[in-house]
Length: 208
Image (cartoon, rainbow, N blue to C red; front, side, top):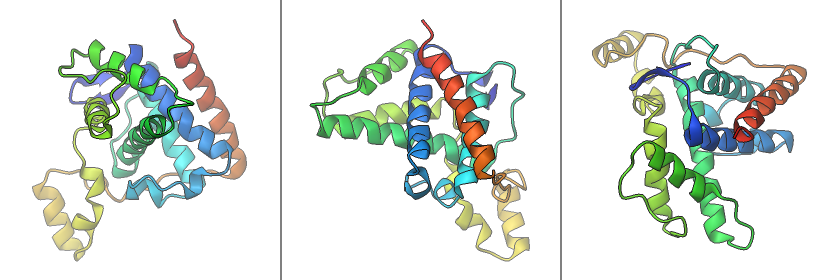
């Protein structure tokens, strides 16, 4: 389960399929040894070690795709991991547009997910305008993320402690939202976590 503006929920239907596919794509990067150097432009995720990245991807994967998981505390590092998955989805769509000879049905899945949630002005599957698809992916992300506070750590923390506390309190942000640290899994723990997370993603992707 996950706490969203739509209440506590898990992803279902094509929304779950799109997220599981994008998360699985990030895990492919991990298996190939690329993830640690894969810059997604989400600073609070990009600065993590490999073990921390796998840890937070497991937290969000289980939280968003499994009914039996207690909602976790929302922190910058956790919400940044969600943003990283959707950023990877944008990259996948951009690659499909630029390399049309080997496309995957990313745009088809995004269209289906947006239609399931009653979206309007959805572009056709063959649309090649990346800005249009960026907007559609952000619509999906906004169904999970409350806002983009995860990007603003420096704005709040680059002050003396008392000033940082004043700003955080004024914005009604939890005290440890920016300071919570992800567990740094060992290589052995990370590989075991990847295996379990891939199994979870596959169960969503292969479901009828």
